Amino acid sequence: MSAKESRVHKVSSPRTIAVTGGKGGVGKTSIALNLALTLARHQKRVLLLDGDTDLANVSIMLGLYPERTLANVIAGECRLEDILLEADYGLHILPGASGVQECMDMEPEESFGILRALSILERRYDYVITDTAAGLQPAGMHMIAAAELACVVVTPDPASLTDAFSLIKVLKRRGYRRTPSVLINMAQGASQARSVFQRLDSAARRHLQCSLHYMGGVWRDETLRQSVLNQKPVALLPESDPSCRQFLTLADMLDVRLSQLPPRKAGIAAYWHSVSKRQPGRTHKTDVAPAVASPRERCLQAVGELESVFEQTTESALLRYDVFIRLFALLGRTPDNDTIEIIQTGLGAIAWESLNPELREHLAAHLRHLADEISLQTVLPEPFYDRIRFGDQKKLIRALKEQPSDVSLSQLLRSLTDIENNDR
Image (cartoon, rainbow, N blue to C red; front, side):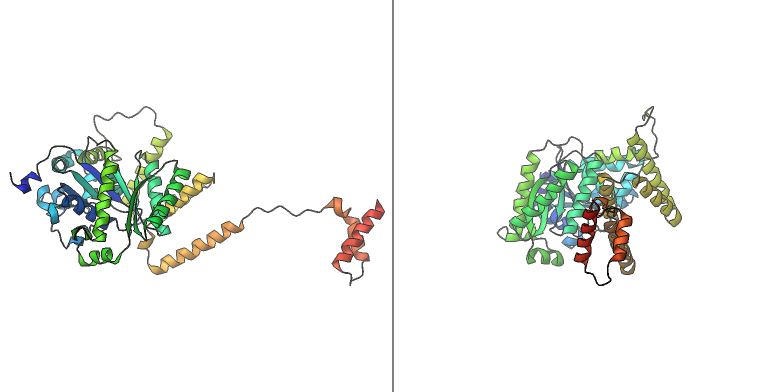
């Protein structure tokens, strides 16, 4: 058996890692690619799945431009093995692009062949690393849930912290039970990286009642930035290079963390297959509907139906307006801490960057005006007349009329006190 063949044949389940982030721009693709190359460099079988449905730029960072992706496999134009790209150290890249979401949206019978091929493929590797879609997109959520370890990439930018917190909150509220790992990227040093993590961990403990795992940090340096521009990842540099050594450390941290977690029996393909059977609106002979749905199940079903309607009528502004107002009116009936967090998370999930500058500035001005109105609506005590101190109001008015026009305030108050004392 050749060296190449020995890297392909494997029957055990791989360790699956999802590299994700609250939003784009935190460097998750660079992290995923350099980590995968580092593991492959040390004789590990690694499959890197490009699951970013928006950008899909893992291969581009290597100067590779795939002619076909998973979407072509779904269309029946080629086999799964035909779209694999091989990079340095034998790293295999599976270009996913829009095919990832399309595969999960297919009927189970339609996707069975593709997912079976993916299941066979992933068992050939020691690691399957997924570069997920950023943000709160359903496809990204499913990619995180399919992996046994989620690595959330965060930068010291306050906006990145907010986005990461929103991501973790949504994961927890959707039933995610595992502990997310956090990697601080673009940090100035170990002290700043640890400080950024502690802020995020403290927020998670306080508001989500969960703790996070610290995966480490990757420092900001010019070599790493240039590597993206030159399409040559730092993991290809000599191991003595400081930038390359960072990912050697990260790979060690990953192995330590994975050693603490039990391996999952089902792989990514099995999870995707289960998702395709749970899609809203699909009925199966083996499905047994509960006699009475719980409030949570009814709400999730209603949201699924609402999403389906919106997908069919994306241009109906009036419909979106009516639904939006009704939902906010429902939330506003009981304005408590949970309501505020829900609104904050919802606002953070909106793709504001897709707005043109003029609309963005208009919206920002409106939100600032709204914030000012909220801050001014402070409940102040109503003014009242101190009868005990100043006596009967009629006597006060009479005393004021009797005072000369040039009297000072202190003299006026003193005379009022004297009048009250004399009346007693």
